[in-house]
Length: 576
Image (cartoon, rainbow, N blue to C red; front, top):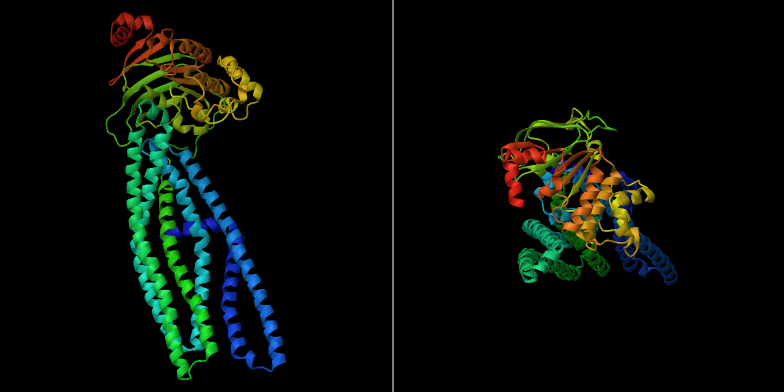
């Protein structure tokens, strides 16, 4: 825990000046709060006994001083509220950048086992709780300690017997608060998990809203959401029960201190051990004595909340990217496009059964290779190994004779263009989505890429042409239009190696012909891997590889594979 707290404290480093100024004004405000009741005591116990003129002059002078102190205290409170929160916001900004950047480094294997809602909650609500702790925690502790120790010393100076009564009740108050805060820790953790579940459920349901509505399953989604919401309320009920007992008890203790102090003070006045001015001062300090206790206990609650969020933050940050650059990874500017699989085997994380076993394959630069086979044979997996979305379990994949694990990841992936069946378009304009293939591209380059992908005509027919907003995931476009935009994106990227992952299987015949023409145009003079279910789209492939659970079962052209009357011929007969 000590190491974690040191690491957490490191986030203050860029904002040291802001942190120390925040602490200074917090301490100054606490000292002023302690000083004002002493001035009141001086006025009520001493100044009122001065000669009239001197008393009047002194009262106005001290009154002016107290007003000035109130104004300084107000500025201190403004400073720690505004600049302290801004420091928290900047730390939250840094941590959010850090965790989002870390998400970008993690491989597909990580995201295969995660829910987006859970990942989202760690970057939103968790970080807010952490930075609230980092902002309020130190200043609350500093203010509370100054007020508590200051009030303790001053109360002992006023009357030791009366001070001991208050201190005894405060000690009981602390024991009570610490006991209940331990109970609340587990409840806060459970709340956080339930919120993450709800975020995940909402994200899943809203992302698939078209499927939900097409099956008229709104009621089923509502039931799923209600069950998650019920679990959330149950977790909250437990937390609020503890909080109710805690707050009611703390309120009772605060009132009890005042009541006991009044009773004891009245008794001491009857015995002549306490003056009325001292009793008034004592009662003014009671608030200074109980408020810090509440703040310290609230800090423990805030600490539990923020620290549990920080532990969840660290869970992600401590996951080392399993696919990353070697220290001596080489940079690549240009490649020919020769791809070689050398005795490659692969299985997914957490599974022992190989998807690919001892695959050997050489593809020359500029060659057009098609991969066919039944679902689960490993076609997509094989292609996912080329850009290192996953790393091989055994063997190696080479680009131009160099193991891809020795190449800088960014440079490797810059050489590869991928067109998938499930096109992902970002919310924004047509221009923005095509330019994603090359962020620094000019408008002319984007338009040239769109023309090459047979997309320019339909784009110009849109209400605002290239500046048309296409909606979340391109919902305003047809399947063929979305696919052509994704092809334009790859045209703009202009990579020497291409992977078409069932890029036309979800399209109608007319759209398929247009997209197929665009794909063939894009594939010219590039090393191309095509994963295809529709065998009609790969008749012209230079090589067709037939994958089965045992690896590459057959290899050849369309005509030679039909003549073999083997696995490929069987697949072809089923389709035609």
